Image (cartoon, rainbow, N blue to C red; front, side, top):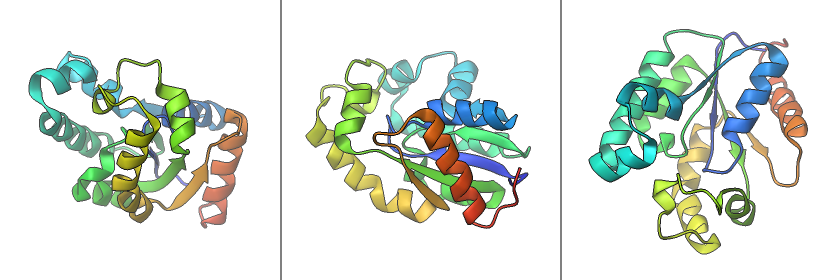
Amino acid sequence: MTNKNIFFIGFMGSGKTTVSAAFGKTYGKQVLELDDEIVARDGRSVRVIFEESGEEYFRDWESRMLREITDGSDTIVSCGGGIVIREQNIRTMKENGFIVLLKASPETTFERVKNEKTRPILNGHMNVEYIEQLMNKRAHAYQEAADVVVETDGKSVEQVVRDVYESIHRAGQSSI
């Protein structure tokens, strides 16, 4: 395994938080949840940040936090779903680590997030069709950013962690 940072990207509900935590535990790596770091520094929830200050303000926080946390290495970073919206974020991740894209279908994503009230991008649009539109809008950026892609539909967390490890290994990174 690499001593670089490993960045988990993907659409909301793809499994970034769950898989990064399990991956970190399995392989003894520090895990940072980017959104949690923003909330801790700003003092407001992501939903409240979006409501009170807007998406651009949140994206500025996201870019700033990404730059700060990439100073270290050997950290698993679970990124927010919109991290790829800004090209500078993709460059920062590429320069400082390895990027794993977790993918789930719109239907799986809906099932995973349908009861959550903390998804500001989906407020008022909690349906498969809207999720699919957003996924399609970001698909190119996700694909361009990713060093490896791992599907999560129908898999246990343990299987996804194994798939991530194997994908990183196949991509030429040294083993743990």
